[in-house]
Image 1 (tube, helix red, strand yellow):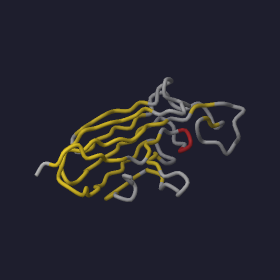
Image 2: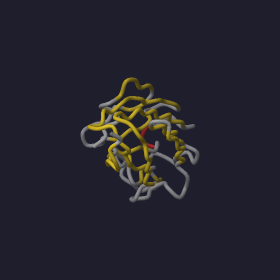
Image 3: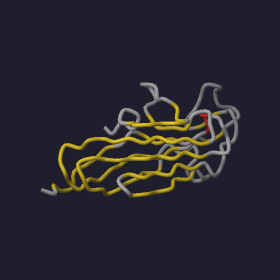
Amino acid sequence: ALDWWGGRRSSQGVAEPTPAQAFARLGDATEGDLDGTVQLPVDGVWLVRFSFFAPGYDASASPDAYFPVQSLGQPAADDTIDVDVNGQQRSLVAGPAVRGQLQGLAVELTVAGAQLRYHFHFRSTLAFRRLHPFLTSGEAVLLRDRR
């Protein structure tokens, strides 16, 4: 598994994951960054996969709930995580079609090299961690060796 937090070189405003919640998520802030590197076993072409989830809102949810719904309040519709992995970029927006869905948005990037260099930039208009979208740990699948 690709552990975004474990490979970090720097982070600001991003919540440190717990063993039960090993994902990358903005903390109690409106902006944050997480960047780092992961060494891969060979210099190759890799398929990198991870998922993007966003909590929904249900006033009757448990006060301790955080996903798929939480009762703290309505998440911001424009919460965004900008993803850059080895120059492959995506902007992931937590719009209504994503919020509260048990099957997250699958993100797949094809990258080359023996190292993953990643940068995630998190943005929200609300400074409440439980309302923010998150990225799961990922996986890298070797498509072909470049040697």
